[in-house]
Length: 190
Image (cartoon, rainbow, N blue to C red):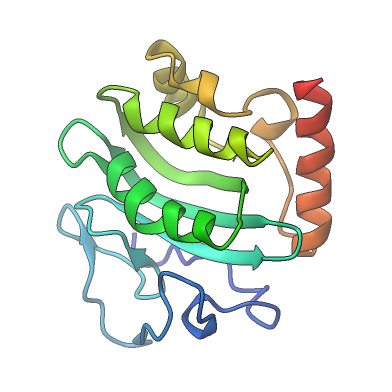
């Protein structure tokens, strides 16, 4: 687990710890000390804690002008034990929404499991972005994770599935990636 790093090729374009509007502004990262773990497995120190036992994120890119954020996720998304969606919504998403971010791309290829609880915070997040003409897209989540979202009906709050299941996003710039997802989302919403 310690070898799985957040995507770093866009660091020349955006670094959350250097962005005054970011929830992670002024965060200091170690390149050598592994201080965080998911269930006793050390994880790479570049991941950002959302104060969850199992879910970490990395804000890869934010464009305040176009109003979107690209967030990579890692670990176990557990609403049953840790209410991860509440923490994510209150401590990360709402701060970004305060800065007029209304479109969220969640990259989930490193989300290993999902455990549901209720859908209150998902519904709230959906309503909030809908009021801002925004959306939430789930990209590259594992099939068993998506099946859990679907079995709980939570997938209805996201744009997911179809072409979003296998997107080769690392070869794009953030703008190209956003444009591709936005085009797909607009087709799905119409």
